[in-house]
Picture 1 (cartoon, rainbow, N blue to C red):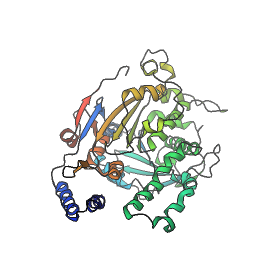
Picture 2 (cartoon, rainbow, N blue to C red):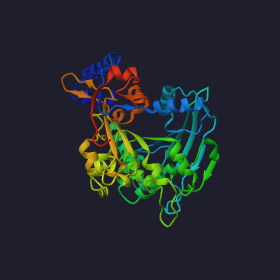
Picture 3 (cartoon, rainbow, N blue to C red):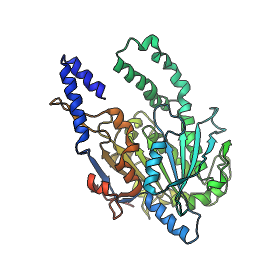
Picture 4 (spheres, rainbow, N blue to C red):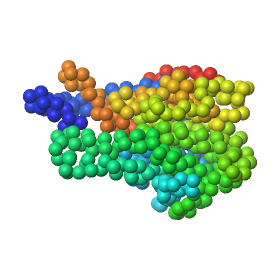
Length: 423
């Protein structure tokens, strides 16, 4: 970003301007952190509350309950292990200071999808020294599915074409060639294997506890495994998405609504009742739901949240979850991120999911003053800097609107409480 600002100064014909801006940026960076953070939504506990309940149960000798957290990336090429910085910060907040030396690896496959493989699911186990808390972290890497499509424009990054570009423009073009096509590809035929990769991941999340997984698996998940219903009842589930991952996950969550019935297969006894009792939490970083809704087939059931989600409602017995809590984090300076207004949730998200959105408008990137020319914030940092922002980590861990809120959220964020009809 510094190079971009300096370049603007040089283009204006004044080298000292660029130097002055650089100096100002450094001075502002050393000053008080005034980045905004505004939350609109109901009071909510973070994932820490689930670990605390688990801890109380384990101290009484009941070790059945686990917290299972799935990470789903967004646009751009990703390699297994991409969530390292996020997990380090989050596990520190959870006081989970013990990790198994080895992870477990699952190659995702689905016989009903023509793609050879659907990516990789990496499973890690985190506990505390007392072994009273346990979190299973599932990291999904699906970007290999889009590699073949993105290869169509690989030539554009070669020296034959790139050398003719200005250096900063070349960097920008390379970023766009790597990231933007994923959203376009998802709207085409490859969305089928991408959604299948999340469905397979959700299935594996209900496979069992740590010891039920092999160190390496290369096979489809057994969707009819009877024990899956047991783990849906006993465990707590949450998902963290980034960017395009928000749309991928939302489209895939209806899979849980079919847990009690699959095509041409026997029912899983108790499956429907188990999912209907669930509160599923999804934390969407750099959410893109409104953008990716354009031009798509609308949800089958819309604008009927009260009818499906309120006890006594006409279709209450047809809901998918008891509640889908959505926490949409958006930096207003991210050109690829959007909030989720209540009207959007009502009119475009399937009512059977019982969605309850909370919007967190947060400056992840620091806006800087350009001496009367306005303010500027690095859009790349605004899109990708969530995994190291202490306020984001604290909101995921501790929530808002109760006595156990993190101090940094109390001091640095404002909260507008909203009430929810029908919950």
